[in-house]
Amino acid sequence: MTTSDLPPYPPIDPTTFDLIIIGTGLPASLISASSSAAGKSVLHLDPNPFYGSHFSSLSIPDLTSFLNSHSAPHSDENLTLTTRPLFSDVEISNFAPDLLDQHLRKFNLDLSGPRVLFCADKSIDLMLKSGASQYVEFKSVDASFVGDGDGRLWSVPDSRAAIFKDKTLGLMEKNQLMRFFKLVQGHLSENENNGTENGAKISAEDLESPFVEFLSKMKLPPKIKSYPLDLLLVKVAFLVSSCDIFHVNVDYFVLFSICRIVLYAIAMADYDQENTEIHKDLLKTKDGIDRLALYNASIGRFQNALGALIYPIYGQGELPQAFCRRAAVKGCLYGKNSALVTALMRVGVGPADASDFSAKGRGVEDSGSYKGVRLASGQDIFSQKLVLDPSFTVPWPLSSSPCEQMQDTFQVLSLSDDKVKVARGICITKRSLKPDLLNCLVVFPPKSLFPEQFTSIRVLQLSSNLAVCPSGMFVLYFSALCDEVNQGKKLLHAALDALLQLLVSGNSENSSTFQSEDTEHVEPTLLWSALYIQELTKGGQIGSVSSTPMPDGSLNFNDLLDATEKLFQNMYPNEEFFWETIEPENSEDDGGLMLET
Image 1 (cartoon, one colour):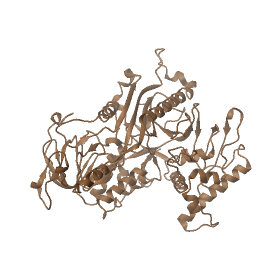
Image 2 (cartoon, rainbow, N blue to C red; image 1 turned 135 degrees about the horizontal axis):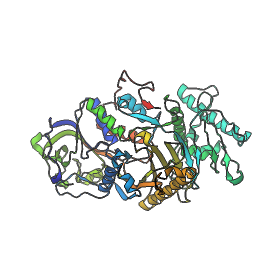
Image 3 (spheres, rainbow, N blue to C red; image 1 turned 120 degrees about the vertical axis):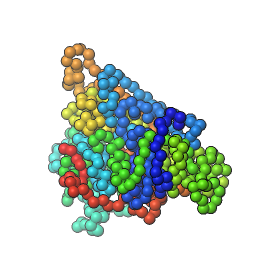
């Protein structure tokens, strides 16, 4: 769509703001809500007809259109604020068009899945603090599993029941695990209470060492004893309260070590931690302990949450909308379908008023400081600061830096991480990965699907009870970090093959359920899929102009929230990132968070 195709826009009044934000992704919405709460006048625009940008939840047609339109550069000679492709190698397949055509608008598909929220993570605390929690409702993720390449799933900790009851763990192994858990619990207690009864504490040297080396040093059993057919029944307790750390209920188990469960299914390590020769993103012990503590604190935090993980009803696109609503309550002005033509530059040096603004083109000679934007309607809107969606590029350095510094300064804005990408996939199926389970998380650790798999692949299955798909269908999101496109595509296809094997093997006894009553035709298990590679951008800032980051490869939003808070503090160093909001009188029992049972 070019500027000539756009509908007419009503004029915006007033025409001067403290901050203009383009795009309603989660980081932009957080900045909008926090800035509005701090008393700033904010104009929040989005060229899309929906909220969320790269964090949105869309119908099948809208998601297909978004991926295709953002996988090729836009060329409009009228635009000087251009967009860049942030998706590539988009593969969309429809295996049941007749069935899906009846339900195309009944899906809410996440662009940046899989994502969940830990009950005790920063995003929940921020929603409660800001008051955004009153606009979103959540459900529990029923269970978590570790998967292998043979179509089997092993349970991951989700309760605090009895410890070490299974006879397949020997007395020595139980003692080793108990010592480890007591040491970790003692370390956490000392940090909280400035001392413990037994003085247990992990040394500073160990805290800086790789977590996998610390686990090995604690002499955790690297592999449980091999049984006939290599099948083991392992029930491991990681106790968390008083004398405990965690309880893990791990059912049938194929040579998976306790260390691997801790590393990839609880601490959620991205890269292969056991090949220390690679030295790529090895998890430090202090970070591993923090992740164990997060998992611990998440279990049982809310009465209606069955385990550690929850997910927003209607999709993760509800999260940016919630913060946009908080911003609107505080006076932020919104406009969707609002296209920009250019950024306005101040010509010359020194103090200036509106008559000094220009919308000139590219080049070093026009490198004045930012002062506003020009909309497709032709209206000029002025502000002190501008925040851009990561898809926008600024074709000239918005800075008064000397010429020799301009190229370096320009590279800081919305800096791309050329070394890492995120491979993402979405599937719509007629079957659950595990019978009788609606919503679950599956982790395929490194090397579990093929020898060259050096990153974890995470899969999130969601059902119609989360209002993301029609009844009788399931949505599966999966993703993995990759260095380049071909590697990412290999990871996606390996994950897809493993999921299809699970769908067939796990439901073989119930296959007749999916056969039509009045015909012998059997509907395909896989109805629709989308595979694509997403670029990573870190965001950045040049003077008054900032760019927000793209969705990262993490399972939760903690790293993204840290980056957003840092960006906000750079913009407004004297303001707090969200002031405390008094909870509404009708807040639920779960601390103001609405959780469906």
